[in-house]
Image (cartoon, rainbow, N blue to C red):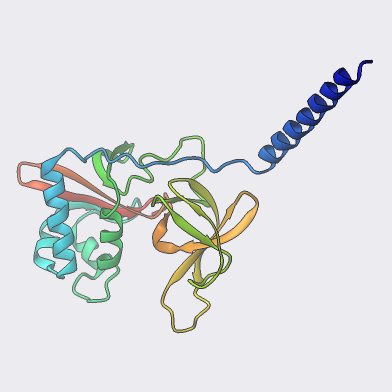
Amino acid sequence: MPAPLIKNLLILAGCAALLALSLKAGAATPAEPVFVPRDEAAGDVSWIRFRDRLLTAIQQRDRKFVLGIVDRNVRNGLEQPRGIDEFNRQWEPDADNSPLWRELPRALQLAAAWYRHDHMPRSLCAPYVLPQWPKDLDPHGYGAITIKQAEVRSGPSGSAVVQRTLGHVIVRVADWEVDDKEPDSKQKWVRIRAQDRDGYIPEEHIRSPVEHLACFRKSENGWRLTSFLAAGE
């Protein structure tokens, strides 16, 4: 066999081996599912104005305004009574440390999407995570990274090594609440599993599809909060 032909065959064999290794590596570490938010209310001026006003009222602890937009028949959980009395019992809005002042803005600061199911008519809900969650993926044990570039660190600390960045993807979650390594730090971390490797991201950069979902409907009196509960409730 001529030497040039042997050389070409060896080159082709080498390329085939490299391709096989590349395909094998890709199969072992599949990419996380892409999950880019679609803000389905971005063009609704009335919603944007209402949402911004509500966020301002929450920041100012304007209880009168916040409770004024709660529907009198608000859903408080599948097994819980409807209505404002139950809403007040669950959330205790008169308390400065009420979780309402933390959970409601966390939901509203993300994109909103239209959503309906057997227990609820079509409503505009925030955040987008549950309404747009892939139907073929179990919502438990996973989370959606909600920013374009989340730094994944080797440990639960801002000084830990940055392993990589991830944005707008779905990842497995091993632990939803990990304390920071620094005892004086209030930062909480989430331990994720991505491409067979553990890492940590700040809790505010990831959202579970079964976390609290705030749903609204528009009436002649404006937007009303008609449901605010976790998917598991």
